Length: 252
Image (cartoon, rainbow, N blue to C red):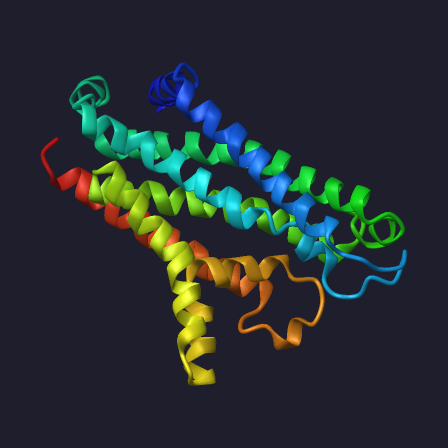
């Protein structure tokens, strides 16, 4: 496993694409969060609403770049045929898949932490007075939103890795992942039956997972913060299981 991890880390850090995707995810996350908080007009200490969730809204955009990175970690090798060389170096496919998952987890966790903390800092700077009181890691709900957002990004990366391993094609995998993330919540809003609409929001990986960012009015959420993150974790686990099984059974 150690050699497999070293090989995957070497491949990831020596290619320009993953680095730029991570930088892009950080910049996009912080920029959107700063833009969202900048349009809020309120008196210091009396903004109302969920300012923590608003400050972390950039995760909605940054997750797309995280997903693309995770897809390319393995689908790029299938597209170029380099997967054969990789499997020659690491014949045990379960070890190879686990190494890729661990490297993706570590990289996304690091970049996600920077992006989420940067978004929170942007909220504090743009909303002086209110931000000093609530947008701080000493506030329990805000700390949960921050930690949960980082975990959410990691789960989206693992979900994307699993789907890409099963599908193999980069473009198709990206389309499937982004469709799950962005189209399901849109479809939920078109459902006229309120009960079915809430059910869809409970099972969609994005709308359920991002419930962890909520810090106010939790009783009106379709699903609780940690339960929602659990739904996203279930999606990621199912995708990894499917991808891992197909990787072991298929020819390279």
